[in-house]
Image (cartoon, rainbow, N blue to C red):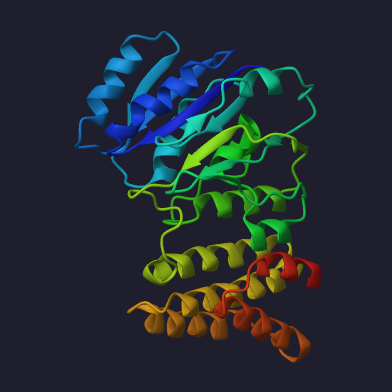
Length: 304
C-alpha cells in the first residue's frame, strides 16, 4: 500500500522533532512525507529543511496562503500515491499503523477510518468518541471523523474538493461530513486507536466555544449549504447540534458568552425553521448542555 503523509507546519518547532520521529519510526515507511510550511517564524522551516534533505522520501513545500486547510491542499496537489493521510505537527503517529492497514484488502474502499487517542493536559489518555457509521448525522452531531483518523484514497479526496479553505475552524469536521455526504466506501477499523492528539497550551482543540463563535457560525453556514444541496434530511441534526453549541457556550460563563449566545441564536433563527416537537427537543438539548450534561450528541442522534 503506497501512502503519503502530509503535515502542515506553522511555528511548531518545539513539537516537530517528536512528531516526525514517530512517523519515521513506522515499521512500514510511508512512500512519501510532505511537509508544508505555512509561514513559520520560529525555526520550524529550517528544521523541516534539514529533515527533508536527509531523507529520500521527504519533501518540503511552502504555502503563503494562511490556514491549515490551504497547507494541506498544497500537499495534496503534490501527492502521487494512491492513498493520503494528513497529520498535525504536534501529535504522535503509532509505529504499526501503516503496517496494519497494508495487510488489509483496501482495493474496494475510498476511505479508511480509525479511532484516535487524546492526551489531555494533565497527561491522562482517553479515546475520542467513535462510532463506525456512514450516517452523516453521526458526524454532524459527534464529530467522530477527525484529521488523524481519516485516510483517503487520493482521487476520491480530490474529486470531492479537498479541504475547504474557507473553514477557519473544524475543517476536519466539515471534511468528514462532506465525505460522508458523497457516499464513500469506508473501511472502519474499530479495535485500536493508532494516533495520539496532544492537548497543550498552543492547541486549538479544546479551547472555548465562546471565544470562537464567529468561526463556528461560518463553518456551520458552510455545512448547511452542503447539506441542503446533497441531503436535506441532515438539516435537522445540524439544528440540534447548534442548540447543543449554544448550551455549551452558556455553560462557560465567560465574558464573551453573552455576545456569543446572541450571535448563535441569531444564526439559528435565520438558518432553521423547525417548530413543534423538533423545536422542543432542541431547547431541551440546549438546557441539558447548559447545565453540564454529558453526551448530548448521543441523545440527539437517537432522536433524529
